[in-house]
Length: 292
Ligand SMILES: O=P(O)(O)O[C@H]1O[C@H](CO)[C@@H](O)[C@H]1O
Image (cartoon, rainbow, N blue to C red; front, side, top):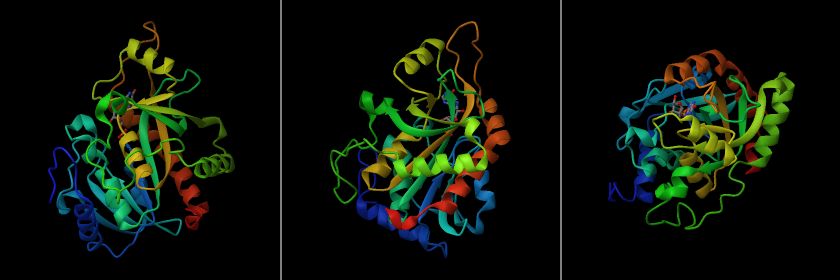
């Protein structure tokens, strides 16, 4: 590697090298990348003609340390479309610099993906939501970014994307419409929501006062991931679709205060991930890959 990894991240050449090393380990050439959130990796089990590349076999790839995140790339087909799934993502609270958290997105771009589906488990802030709902990301609030930890900090290489990328429209409106139509066809209208996801650094869950603050800021759901990946994807011209499984409701009042646990997040993931998987598969089936 040619760069000072602690400050800048991997160079453009480094990323191409990592991508070509990975592609040597599979026969597949993916068009769609999917990042699996906490407890949501089961989608990988239904990939057809699957080939697995463990992160440990990829030089310079980080390792996953969080329960519910296995560390492997799964290549193959969903609904006849070539995909690569990240079964396990990286989080800032694991101690990785922000650029490293999102580095696999640049690797997937170098492998040829043009569409990214980002999934996560999130806490509901919008009082109309309930546990088990699916929330399409219309927008996000990059709280770490707003406080000086934007994933794009450091020297910019224009081959990745522009110095000052627009973030309006990060979540592709055609894919949002496709998700809504697909959800109606699946009979999911009553669990489908749309809203704004806010990223906190974690790993501590929110206090009641913090949840109230995040809600007042206009966030509908909160989590500790996704935003750096979406920002890097938008920066390098990938169209993005984001979706949260609401695994718990954040307490907005002390009367109702009940502490969220990661075990609860994983348990709801296990129980409700099927709905998310069906929605994503049906969307992929209807996706036009020549559209972007
Ligand atoms: O965002 P994903 O990876 O789905 O995980 C969510 O679940 C964990 C907390 O239970 C946090 O890592 C939070 O971000």
